[in-house]
Structure formats: C-alpha cells, structure tokens
Length: 403
Image 1 (tube, one colour):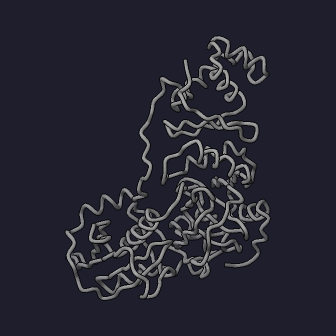
Image 2 (image 1 turned 45 degrees about the vertical axis):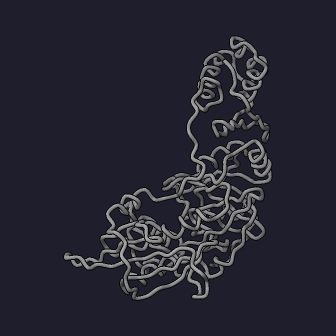
Image 3 (image 1 turned 90 degrees about the vertical axis):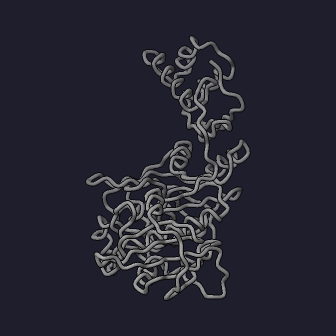
C-alpha cells in the first residue's frame, strides 16, 4: 500500500490539505487522517497504523481498526493511493446551460434579418451587440440586462441575434444565435430573455482570465468582499438580495470569478434572479418585484429579475475577506458558526464549476496561503432578516444603508 507520487501535504489551521497534481484533487485531512498520511509516507507497515493513532490519542482503541480501514478506502477513492482511480480532469469547461444547449438543437439554421432594434451590452471584457427581430423582445431583454447597456462607440466582441416568428398558436417564437451559432430556442416570448442572458454571461466568463469559477453570491463590505458559496436551493440569491438591500455592495448572486495569483474577485453584476417561491419574501425588501416581467428559464423555473444598484457596474475586483456558506432550513434556528479553513477550502472547491488552468503545487500553495487570511463561517437560517444581521456583525459592516 503506497501513496501516489508527487503529493503535497500542506498544514492549515491544525489540520492539513493533501493535493495530488496527477488526479487534480484537494482533500481535507483532520489531524488523525494527516497522521495516517505521514505514516504512509514513512512506509510504516499497515498493521501498525491503528496502534500509532491510538498511541497519539487521536482514535480510541475500540474504533481504530475500523477507522483506519475507512480512511484508507477514502484515500483510495480520492486517488491518493497508487491503486486508486485517476479521473480525467476538464481544465476549461464552458459553463453552458445543458437545457438551453438541448433547446439550441431545435433552432432553425441562421439566416440574416433586418433588426427592428439593436443595443450593445457590456459585461467584463465582453461587449455584445444584440439585434432584435421583434419589438416585444426588447423590453424583456432590457428587464434583465438593461443596466449593462453601453454606447454605440464600443466595438462588439460578440453578436447575439434574436429572430422572431409568429406561430399558429399565437405565441412569438425566438431563436437565439451567438455569432451565427444557435444557442437556444424559445417557443414563447417569456422563455427568450434568460437564454439571451445566458449567452452573454457564458461568453463573458469564457473570455475572462480566472483561476476558479465558483457558484456563489458575492457582496462587498468596503475594502473586501464576501463569498456566499452554495448549491441551488440554499437561499443564496435571497440572502444576497437582502444584504444588498441592507447596504452591501453588489457583485453577483451566482458567480464568483477568482483571479489567478491575486485571488481577487471580479464583479459580475447581472440582475438578481429570484424564483417564484421567493417573491413573497422579497416584497419586503424590493416592493417593485411583483411588477417586474415574469420569465421562464429552460429548467422551467419561473423567475423575476431585480436590477442591481446603479453603481454595481462600476465595481472593481476586490480581495476576499470572508467566506460564508449559507443554507436555508425552514423552522431551523438562524445561527452563524465558524468553520475550519481546511474544511472551508474543501467546501469551496465543491462549488467550483470550472478551472481556467491546471492546478499545480505552486498555485495550490498560493491557494492555501490565501485562505489563511479569510474568515470562514457556516450560516444556517430560517429568518432572512436575522441572517443578514449576523453577516453584517461577522463582517464588521454596518450595512445600514438601503440599496
């Protein structure tokens, strides 16, 4: 039983992180697992593992053998041991919406048309010229990305065309193309704008220089920003919206682009996406939400988009001061608890949707050094107002202003 070659064991807050460049895997180790790893490095015979751990007081003797077996199995599954699996790693996956990609297959071949209107929109380094086939499309697209509109002097880097065809059932069908390539088909007008939004932000992300693309809300506190990494359904977008209303600066409600070397986060100020299940909750913060246009996303979620504050598009990349993992639980007490940085790093990487470059021991060491300066928490909440207050207190932000 031997460790895979070229592994790095990096101490972090009393725990450790082990990195395999071959497998491209970061694994959080508690003190007992880190000791077992070091014993493997020393070629200690396997029958002695349980005794060593017991002698150090890290595992009780009655559970030592079972614990060693389970930990070695975890090492093997994560590719830490020589006989473990080596999973292929996608270095530059495109953050495409799979459902929208399937819809694109139903688009008609691109044909040029005379647009009824056109407008340029800028996000990061990407400028999209959007050309509309029907005037009804304009209002809905503006309701999502209107705040990103820029003047006609900016040279577009991509062109998004939206043709229009009135169907026999009375609905307006829109086929969406990016540089002449189909990206989505909307059988109804209400389904069109989210496809356009996705085409813009996917292009912007793919053209931007980042190290990690994290699924997270991001808000600013002054000289730094707060990451809110979480899976869908965690209440992340609602919490982001509540914090922005409280006075935090808005960066994004779903995307954190962490830059290489500096680990700063670039703003991605798309409109805040609120699902129909959260409209009643958001009314107290954004009374206008019930008058905003209704959109249907390709996953059939019914949405409204809250435009961000006017100064959001002027934000600059900021360092990360706090990482807070939100999780909504109905009827659960709202509480904020510290998380070990080693555990937080593993959870953060669990929300990483794309890598721009291959990880190596150099940038992983930079990553570990970076997170030693970040305060990490877990936020379980049932009260959005209390959750926002706890975040304000933890980050030292008064957050008393209204967005």
